[in-house]
Image (cartoon, rainbow, N blue to C red; front, side, top):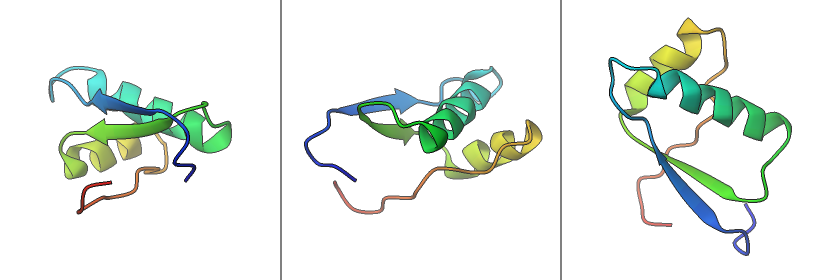
Length: 68
């Protein structure tokens, strides 16, 4: 990951809403054609993976357990 790129934090939003699916789509797009930024998704890891699978996308997010 390029440390010189700006970081953008994106929350998954309301679990009952469309936010988790939108985040999965953004992560998928970023994996195929990266945006000029470092994307950090904030939210429940299991929810993200479940919603990505529900719409037929691979789980593209990495897990960070330490500050970056």
